[in-house]
Amino acid sequence: MPQMMKAAIFVEPGRIVLDEKKVPDPGPLDALVRITTTTICGTDVHILKGEYPVAKGLTIGHEPVGIIEKLGSAVEGFEEGQRVIAGAITPSGISNACLCGCHSQDGAGTKHGFKPLGGWRFGNTIDGAQAEYVLVPDAMANLAPIPDGLEDEQVLMCPDIMSTGFSGAESGAVKIGDTVAVFAQGPIGLCATAGARLMGATTIIGVDTVPARMEIARAMGADHVVDFKAVDPVEEIMRLTDGRGVDVAIEALGTQPTFEAALRVLRPGGTLSSLGVYSGDLTLPLAPFCAGLGDHTIRTTLCPGGKERMRRLMEVIASGRIDTRPLVTHRYALDDIESAYDLFSHQRDGVLKIAIQP
Image 1: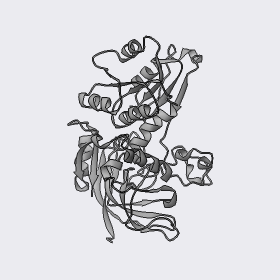
Image 2: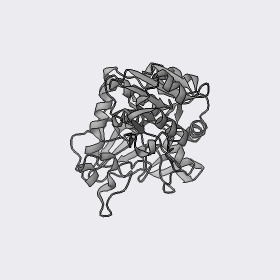
Image 3: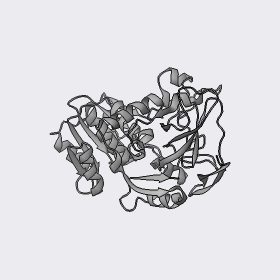
């Protein structure tokens, strides 16, 4: 095994560069995974732009697919050479947040107490997956074997995008017969659309303006797709629902306009399920908020992680109920990841997700 590896490293706002780092050595409960495929997330772009702070010198990326290279001395139930994924969220399983059932807000189980987003460690508080190797903490809680017959790109969305999108429908408590609006049909919004369909929604309205994304939205389960540049999306959704509004509105972009639009289309007592990563303060408009008296529910979500979540998502893939491979629109070698960031951050050439392979 080599002593050094290539990794995409955050240098400063505006600069993520490919450089070399020492290959990490796993502790007793860790696993070293050789990356075979990973990807770039919208959150990584927030990091690149300096909108989400991380330490300089950190390896970025939180969506690993790979092969176990080396196991910690205390890890049981896994084998070196096994194909695995790990979720973007890597809960320890022993923190107060985990034991309360909120694994994504792990808090790292330290004496300093709860830390928001503590379960998101890859590319946030520890080195991430855009590298030749990644160290997976608490391996027995987080490694999930890839079922035989599934390719890397079939499971690439499971660590984050699919888990997050599905969480939007789950947090919104979508029920059989519900009407659901999903604002933004990027990768997460598309998975939210698919998740809403799997949970029983019978009318799903996607909102976007990019023709390719609108086409994929229909394939993923949208019954109607609203082009927000052609019509006012709030007015169109109210028209489509005969003025009733939607049971659940899922916000999958992270902007004030989309958040506000999601609030405006809710029926009385409806749920706004927010998935976006916001880079500024949000305000609640008085009228659609009904001055706080509308019986609305506003839910925020950081997708759950851990091996059981990953197992369930890969079972959905293996069952054929959803195919996320069309979300991979571009492929780059790790050596070219700086070019991949340039493409993805500027949303050129119809990019949805990029498969990165060392």
